[in-house]
Length: 233
Ligand SMILES: NC(=O)c1ccc[n+]([C@@H]2O[C@H](COP(=O)([O-])OP(=O)(O)OC[C@H]3O[C@@H](n4cnc5c(N)ncnc54)[C@H](OP(=O)(O)O)[C@@H]3O)[C@@H](O)[C@H]2O)c1
Image 1 (cartoon, helix red, strand yellow):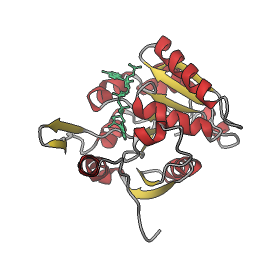
Image 2 (cartoon, protein in one colour; image 1 turned 60 degrees about the horizontal axis):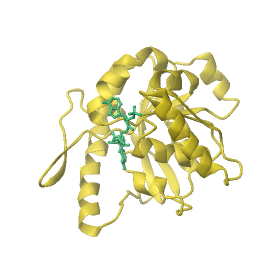
Image 3 (cartoon, protein in one colour; image 1 turned 90 degrees about the horizontal axis):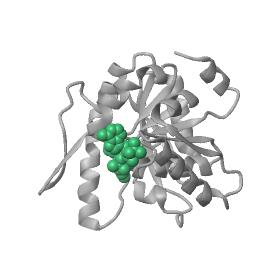
């Protein structure tokens, strides 16, 4: 699937949008991708909230040479303005957000980092998803988009820590479309310390999303922000 926008994106840097970009993960990814030189659109249900978040990020990035432009928009305009759109809303909002934006997301590479998790007294646990995973649900809801799963294990706390020059971790990148998974792996590579590693097709996204529950257990026991590293590559 390709729109005039994505065809142009091959000749220029992609514009990166973030649905729910006002939140922890979205704003952390926005900060790092803008710092890497990409133009970023922070999406929100509320354009005022998006504009405020974009202004905060722009202020933080003022001292970063070569940083991209950060703007804010409602989630629909964010999708329309972007070539690559990261879904960074809570699992409870995943289905309705994507159903409502299917038209705006047509022709885009949609990057899903959503972890369907539940929490109780014993900690985090993986939820059952009828389609198998959040990423497969996205693919079902967005037949005209290229859905890629990535950034599930990247800590928002580390992304947002401006004292940290690098975020050391590997990012498993899953999807059906080689060009799209290569593009998203290359996006991960733009962030210092981070590396994109192809992790298979979307039918194997379930355990990647679920692994986040294990990382949360690691975090609680060791008081850290754990990520994953793949050996042998
Ligand atoms: N936090 C992490 O370390 C981390 C790491 C990896 C992956 N993730 C995944 O990233 C996603 C976002 O996590 P987060 O911690 O950033 O969450 P969050 O801060 O709670 O929420 C992100 C944004 O989603 C929007 N949102 C909230 N409720 C919504 C609803 N009912 N409908 C539509 N939009 C809604 C809000 O933006 P507006 O109010 O501005 O619309 C909010 O700022 C999750 O699915 C999570 O599994 C998180």
